[in-house]
Image (cartoon, rainbow, N blue to C red; front, top):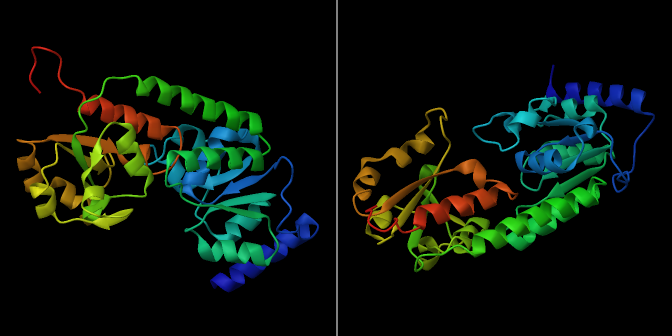
Length: 288
């Protein structure tokens, strides 16, 4: 069966059982059957909505190596972003990321399904605004306010911690990518009292960096963006390069689980706290 035939059959079944098409610009005041098609929107939906109102989240969110809400996500049906799956779930609201499942989103809009898309926050202020917008969309504004208040309280507590004199740090991700100016990761580094070497080198957002640059960059801290116990992959080979082991003799290597800042949510505060701990000077009388 072709994709087009599968879509047509699923659409026919949906039309026959749903009583017609809802307008794409009409979201219910409190959706009862929410489908999320993006791992980051999954996390916010899982944190803000009642599980009984969540019809499906992506399969990615059920993997604890990559997702922060895997325990709850495993109790909810998973989807792989296919339009046939979405139609069969009969949602009254579909939530997607701005850069993922584009063909599915386009088809769902064509049939008049209510779809809302969320972008990628580039700083903490945008993260708060996204939580606020998501909570209102889900009809759970009080949950959004509570989550934002929790984030603010944790940030305030971390702001009072002593900090070193802005050590220089650089992030190394799979395939040799790093994170520069104008990104949420850059703001996380700043919140942890670190100077982002990639930003000093003129890198904006995400860009590749040579290991030679990392080795000669005079960083104090090298942050390895890893997935603990993840399957072997060529993309991750660079994170195990012998050069990095040698660099450990003169700078501090910090392994930071990717899931802490892949998505904009409360887990980024865990990332800030981890980096603050890593950058803290050793107790008196001890050497690093």
